[in-house]
Image (tube, rainbow, N blue to C red; front, side, top):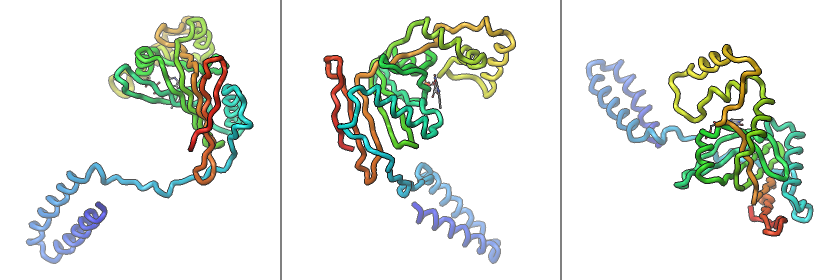
Length: 262
Ligand SMILES: Cc1cc2nc3c(=O)[nH]c(=O)nc-3n(C[C@H](O)[C@H](O)[C@H](O)COP(=O)(O)O)c2cc1C
């Protein structure tokens, strides 16, 4: 690939000098050159933009995750790791990837903010008519993924997902800033829209017509609760010997802890 591109640029340089020396003959040379360039662009375009990332490598050294020191309750470990991520200065430690799947098994992922967690589960808010909302209604199971770079830790959580009660969603919606509430109302999340300024205009119109008290949560916007049946904790270590612990529900109300190979 690189050789072909190199040859092309050499050819171009040659033609440039040649056209100065023999302007009449140069026309034929240019025709060949452009044909060649068109062919190479056509054949190689998908692979011209190669970016080699082989040297991009991090050695993880921040700590260990030992089975002997792991709490029996994964929520306690999650809370500790979350606190550590915050204290380390992570920006938006509550940003997580939510992975969903439709009934045909087609996957999709996006970042969403975790807004609450307790031993009942993990809560996030969204538009129920969005892609994720539809996928969850077809296949009410998700995985959540946190990557906390500053502490070199990853947590993956699998579980069933449920809509929280309307009263709970109302409570959270009413706590949001005025603009965020308007934003949630005017956005038909995941739908195709017309033009770059469509949302701004819709937002501005609604902003002008509304006052704080008249803004109510629309039915299609609210919270989901993820009730985990599995956690996988990952702590980066030198030499790719990362520590991994999996917590699985043991069917008796407790959790079974297993070490996984990195
Ligand atoms: C940092 C960050 C936080 C986000 N938080 C939320 C959120 O809390 N709720 C939400 O619906 N979308 C959130 N989004 C937007 C989603 O990533 C996504 O674009 C949107 O929910 C539509 O996803 P879908 O079409 O797959 O349903 C966030 C995006 C980023 C980058």
